Length: 230
Image (cartoon, rainbow, N blue to C red; front, top):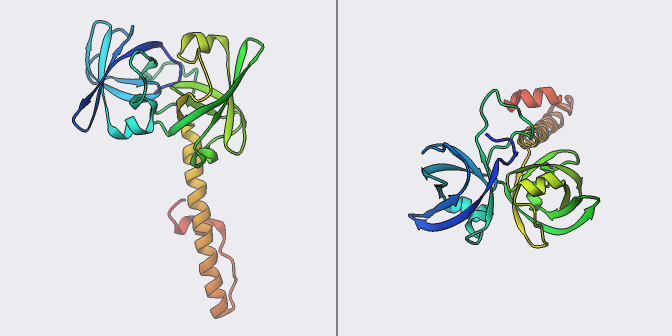
């Protein structure tokens, strides 16, 4: 688990095929890394397989390579790095799992004072998880959603965020790893299941009504209990 507060940036030095996936080598200033540690690299949770001096290695599955920008970044690219959250630490960002949901593509950007407003196009299937004033992680950076439209959303990058991460240069067409808010994921799942249970209950109640002239509506609480949701 992570917070979306980037500790430092590193440099992607190598991406070699290893079995069905890849082995990444990242140069970084992170100290004390050990084999087995979890590190968010551009927001994707990876496990350290080797560490020495100012670099570490981690394996990248084909699924992660396809779903994130880690499979297509050029060597020498800057990547955001964050070690796993320790219990008892301050949570200044938001809960980030390191499980990237998809890629968001930069559509446009513009200065607003010293900040930068960025509009990004998101995969349509992720629309239900985005809400104004909600949270997202972009390349592992915890950000607040300023606005949501039919296929795009906006965030604001303040000077400190741009200086401390790889978001210093945001140009149209750039793809960023997008992770939706963890709480939104479960709320949407709950409501989807509740809606399905309610619909099934209504169908069953309608069939009973047509055959026995009984009440034609099942209470929502009964439908949820029957579906095992509550």
